[in-house]
Image (cartoon, rainbow, N blue to C red; front, side):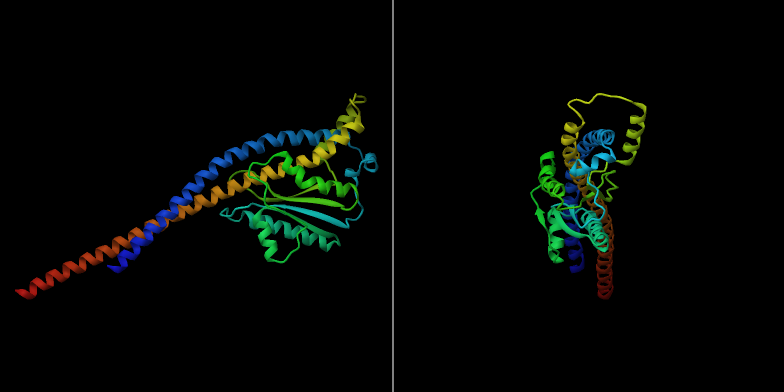
Length: 294
């Protein structure tokens, strides 16, 4: 009887755990819809902005605009790692941290001094445990990211790059493809390099269009667009990471709920077998006692 009671306690415990994981899955599904809407809204703007930058930039302009500066050798680089403040998202944070570590190893192997900037409690906790020095730590970025948050993260790095205190700035984030696919990615935001396909299209457009009018002028436009392009790149990385986090958590909680269901099925079968064995034993004892009285 004691064994049956132990199994019943385990069944109740797993049922409570399954209720929690199912609730977390539903919450993550609700948040994922909102975050994915932000991603789909940010992508077209980012693509068009990259196209405009590709049309206006030219190799000859690199000497005039600090954000287009292409150092021959990168002496010092900054790595901005985006992680989450909460766990229970499978290997989401582990993959991001691994991507950042591999990037830092490659840069140091090339003789580049690397400084690390971490967003999210999980990344901060890992590097603090490993004894890795962090140049900055942020845990106050909310789930719903705004362009102002991107400006807070990258504006100081952009100013240091313009002052030649940094030679490159990288962002490690999670790319949101779907709820089941959120691979880590590394984006080089400084120096500004428009997407290659946009640059090729822009070159063809310049060849096809002999003259066109810019107002208030290419210099004024680039002075505004280049910082905006950098901030927008970081903002897109922020919203993609937020959506990827909810997708990873939804997948992890669904797997946990399904596994809890499998465990419950096994426990119930075990309980039924133990109960049947106990009943059979009690019947055998009754029959044996009755036979002994005859």
